[in-house]
Amino acid sequence: MLRRLKVLALLLVTAGVAAAAWVFTFASMSLEPPRPGYEFTVKSGASLRSLSRRLADEALLPEAHTFWILGRLLGKDTSIQAGTYRMDRAMTPVELLDKMNRGEVVAVEIAFVEGITLRHWMAQMKQHPKLRQTLDGKPADELRAAAGLPEGSAEGWLFPDTYRFAPGSADVEIVKRAHAAMKKRLNDAWEARDPDLPLKTPYEALILASIVEKETGAASERPLVASVFANRIRKGMRLQTDPTVIYGMGLAFDGNIRKKDLTADTPWNTYTRDGLPPTPIAMPGNASLQAATRPAASEFLYFVGKGDGTHQFSRTLEEHNRAVARYQLGK
Image 1: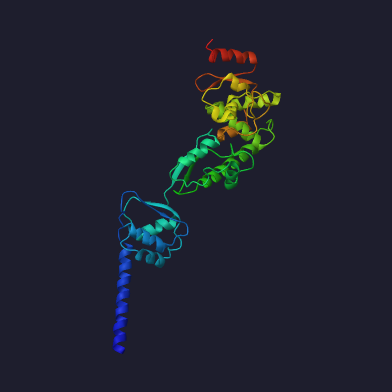
Image 2: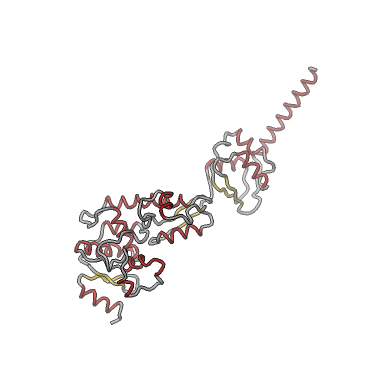
């Protein structure tokens, strides 16, 4: 009996040594990606054991057990981070564990340009293949609630920028980040506003910034464009800006604005209604926020496009009419 126990003990020690040797050998083994640009996704809450089985099924690992055992021995089995990982070269199991512990996930991006509307923003997210769709088809109030947007219109409340995210992230997370960015930018601009600014609230500044954004593509002119609208507000003049009319037309806008459109009353028609429109008309960038809160000091009340992306500014209607004749009518 004693002899048998000694043999069993020897076998166990031998097996343990062999297992330890295998784990040690495995730790420095070169794992070749099963295909170029190989990617795999670690879901939130997934165990290293289940991941090991999947990576073995996908032929990255030679078998499904040693990888998670190695992770446990190194204390790296409970700290892998969720996300999509990419292997462009061979890696050792230890390197792969370190990569997942650091969270070196593949990041993709989506870029929103200044002046985009909420409708186009949502359509752009819907078309992104790496975003998980949770907002598509939801009514406006559900969208606002899910994204933490304020009551009323969500237009204007998302900051146009490039956002990086892990593949499979929800579209609502992009909206939340963009909203937080806009709130901060708007608050910073409002805190540094011109003391004589004829606006009462940050929201009014957001509305004006959206108009400035749509009125000019020339960054250097934005403070002057903003000054025209600020001067008109001070004098009680209507803003008379085409982009607000276009926004009010919605899907009926076909690329051309006609005289009948300028006289057709909507809440956003600043030819037929006094003051600012009820909501922003686009997502303004930081330059437009700055211009709306700190307009240039000027006496200008009018401007007209020169045809090259810039404008001619005028102090009086007579000056403006001459500029229109020159730049719009070719007289």
